Image (cartoon, rainbow, N blue to C red):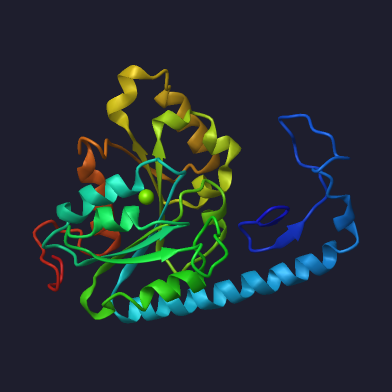
Length: 272
Ligand code: MG
């Protein structure tokens, strides 16, 4: 969203270049934004309208999905953290318990949608470079377009795999019931502090690539400490999507939000 951003309380603003920098740059060169000072107020008004429209459509998405009895999870992460690999493990693990839809968001290509096809879930691909300006996130309008290609009457759980990006996806309500995040230990311990919005909005943080732990200097205690400073209520699940080790708590978390928490229940029947 560039210089405009929205706070958790819903307020939107732009500000002068007064945020903390961890680098030096020359404000007189291509990084010079001083010309925006005169149009700043107008830009905020325009952005508030855009976000207001997004939130209105997100509410419609939420109402339509819940009207179909579908629980929706917005799955977010950096590129390469392992969302698609995790979903390829998750779909078979929930077989017989929930009928799953995947709304696959990518800037370009059907690579991930193809990877998740044939595993038992209905898959709908939204490429943001196909009419949506190549955006770095899904918004409610894009999700609405993707929903039109899913058999909503036949689903219990919709997982939206958002575009891989640690910033933008967290700023848009798409109509989800819960937000989940995948975080790879290859990303280091400090990212919750540097990119707090997504970590703050996630109910669950899946800490992925645990199979690589012996080969990294990653300090799990420090990461959990950093995460707790930003979001003390987040559920943390350590696993390896590659090997499948540690998958069960994630599957049970999904089952819990979908209201099928009892492992003996079958899709279409009420849980115990
Ligand atoms: Mg992916």
